[in-house]
Length: 178
Image (tube, rainbow, N blue to C red; front, side):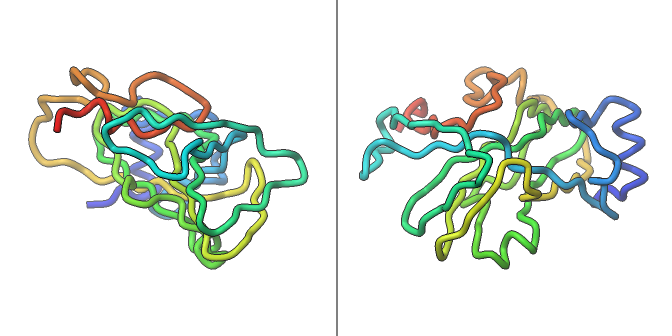
């Protein structure tokens, strides 16, 4: 079951959903709009290696915007810091963003109960497009969970994305044993 706007508000009041900054006008019928943060990053190397720590170069989006290019993976970040203590959050791109040919995530649209951070976006585009800090990019949808949760993300040993940040975070796949 997806939470309605009234249920999202009730969970914010309970403290089981935290959104900072929170703007009431960003609350939709059954979602909350999130915005592109100030920073983007790209990988340094043209070939990435899943077993190695691939380094990124971060930069601030200028006031006049930044033109994304096809063929480049950009890591972005949401302006909003979120915490989800009792629901499963899903981040989906806004249709207006999709209609500009922008994908905001390759595979990582689902969060975990206990996730407390900004969301790193895996941005790719089908044609050149200028983007701006603060533009609406996605919407968070919250699903209820049946049963007790034993392993909250923010308490899970080995969770790779717990360090609070306002900048995009590169893949930590290299920390996995395979």
